[in-house]
Image 1 (cartoon, one colour):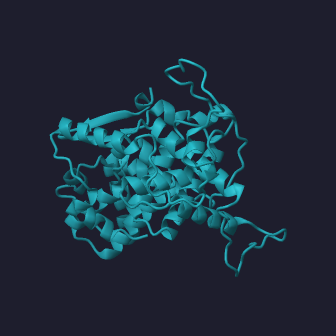
Image 2 (tube, one colour; image 1 turned 90 degrees about the vertical axis):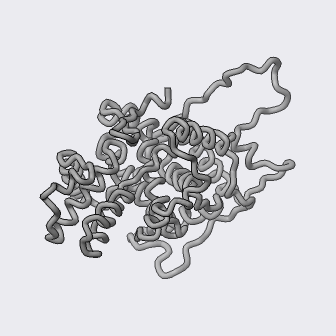
Image 3 (cartoon, one colour; image 1 turned 120 degrees about the horizontal axis):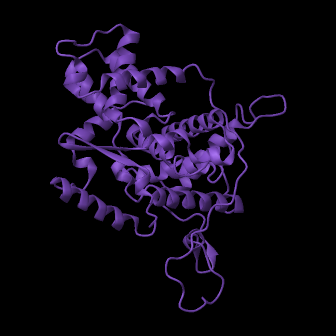
Length: 359
């Protein structure tokens, strides 16, 4: 099953983040399509970098960007890069994350931002940027290309929810939150805070969030930042014991993060697309349906016989997503004995986290 693809680890007094099993980490689905490790690594870094840049242009909080990157990285341990184009998946991840953290952005705005970023990558025959020194064009909402991009985004968004079991809110625990707790407790200089943020944001380009607990990733960024700045951390008692960080895991993560800076900037790689699996309906039609069938995306984009390409899509109903997520959150709260909050923004700690995050 979908949920069985991830394992949930529980620690003393709290549930810990679901991680991708080692066997899946070692052999992701893209290997079956002949995509080697280096190509997949470059595509992962390219997509995450795209999400970061688009998040800045869309003025999203860094926690929304981190959530989108986490969804993006995890999805490609369920599906291959040959099935879902990296730009479309990046768009869908950022769109979904903005809704989950209650900073929704219109689909039309997301499409235009990603299109502008794509146009900035285009080059002339001499290698110069095609739109250097001039405005980057927008995509005409009345054209078929816009409709196709939107359809692919909506399809990718549904597939993220399907593959991650409609419980994506359980994956939105980020090392940024823990890093704030560590630094506030240690009362170290502001320069250390900025360095830690830089390392955490760069780590979004990797799949570390799929293999390690966010508490340990935050600890690794603290190790690297303090080492670079020559800042001493408490040893009596050891700071990692105070914060519940597994120091061996944090040191392993730190070495993997350092390897990131030895690599060249990621570039887009064209991957031959293969046809995705078509899911048959669980309940057959009692009689043949009349008229041609439509996909969910086609139904969303068609109103009274005309395409509504310029429609405002901030509140797209993805097959009862809001109701399904509300039930899931309520069930989780009842199971753990925690009162359910109506809005994440009402939590003072979360407000403090978002206010202190820098791009």
